[in-house]
Length: 266
Length: 288
Image 1 (cartoon, rainbow over the protein chains, first blue to last red):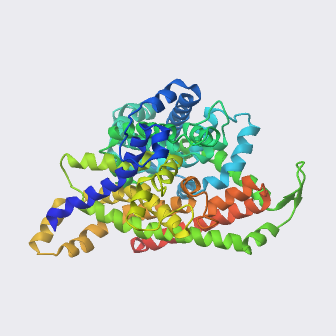
Image 2: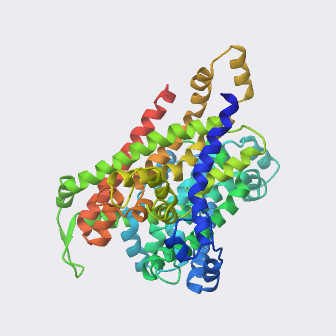
Image 3: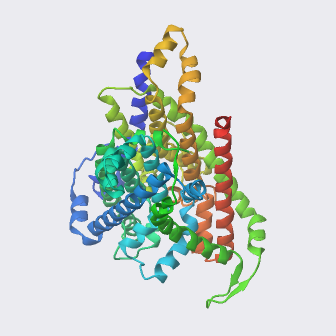
C-alpha cells in the first residue's frame, strides 16, 4: 500500500500534463495536419506558428501589453499592501477587524458583475484602453489577497524584533525598510507570485477595459479566432507561450507557495 | 506573540489600500445599485422603479434555472476537488528532490490564462480531432460535448477538476508539512492505523488550510465565467449556462441594465451569504 503511494500523484500529474502536451504538440503542426487527420505527435514539424507570432506586431504586442499591466499591478498591490498588512498584524485601531473582512469580501465579487460599471468608470476618468486601467482594476482582488498573505507572514515574526530595533534607536521607516522587509522577503515573494498569477490569468476585466493600445494577449487570441478563421496551430502556439511566464515565476517561489496560504489567517 | 498595541496610526497605514479598493469596489457597486432601481429608454433618461427588477429576477424561471445549474456545478466540483486534493497531498513525498518537481508541475494549470484553459479543453475534447474526444469515441462511448448536455457537463467538470484541484493539493500539502515528525512517531508507538493517523492527527492539522481551500474554491467556482464561456458558450442550448454567463448575456448582450444590475446584486449577496455560512460552520469549534 505504502509503496504504491507514489502512483497517486504520478497519475494526477499525467492527467494534468495530457491537455498541455496536446496543446504544445498542436502548436508545432500545420493547420492542415490538425484538421486533416488525428496524429499524436507532429508528422510535419513546423515552427511557422511561432514565427508568425514573433514577427506580427498585433501578436507580440499582446504579450507586451499583458506583461506591462501585470507587472504594474503586482508592484502597486504589494507596495500598498505592505504597510496595511503591518498595521493589521501589529496594531489595534478603530474598525480594524471589519475593515479586514470588508477587504476579503472584494475577493468574492464576481468579475461579471463589475464589467460594465468598470467600463463606464474608467472611460469617465479617461483611462480606457491604458495599461494602468487594467492594473488598477485588478487591484480589486489582488490587494485583498496580498494583504491576507502578507499579514500571515508578518504575524509569524515575533514582536520582539520591532521592539529591539526601536531600543537600538531605529526610526519606524528605517526599521521597516532595513530590517522588517528583508525578514519577510519570502512572504513578499509569495504575495507577488499570487498577484502576478491572478492578474495574468484574468481576462474578463482586462478585455472590457481595453480595445487596441493595451489589448492583452488572451484577448488577441479570442479575437483572432473569430476573424481569421480557424487557425488552430497559431492559437495553440499563442496558448503555449502564455504558460511560460507563469512557469518561470513559479520556479522561484516553489518552496514557499504552499507556505503562503498555510500562514494566512481565515 | 503578545497583544497588539492600540495605535490610530494604523489607519494611516491602511489608507492607500482602502482608497484603491474602495475606488474599484464602491463606485462600481453604487452604479450597479443605481441601475437596479431604475428604468431607461436610452438617451441617458432614467426613471425610478423601486424593487421592480428585483421582483422580476427573483420570479423568473430563467434565473432559477441558472442559479440551479450554478449550485450544482459548485457542489459537484467541491465534492470532487476537496477529497481528491487531500488524497493527492497525503500521497505526495514529504522531502527529497521530487517535492519541487511535483509542486511546480501541479501549479502549472493554475498559471494558464482562463480563456486559454477553455480553448485548450475545447480542442482537446473535440470528438473528431481532439485527443480526449477521439479516445472516448474509439472506446465506444458516444461522446460529443457540443451536442449532448451530459457530455458537456462531464467536460466542464473534468476541466475544472484539471484546473483547480492543484490549489487544494498545495494548501493541504502546506498543512501536512506543518505536522512535526514526533506526532507520527508517537502514533507508530501506539500502533495507530493509518486511518486513525489521518482522522486524529492529519485532518485536524489541515483544518485551517482546508477552510481556506473550500472558501476559495467555493467563491471562485461560483464566480466562474471565462472557462465555460470559451468551452461551451453555455450550450448545447442552455445546458451549461451558469449564473455569470447568463448575467453577461443579459447585461452586455441584451443591454437590459436594470434586470442585469438587480441580478448582480442578488448574485453577490448569495455568494456573501453562502461564504459566511461556510465560514461560520467551519470555524464553529474554535470559538470555545
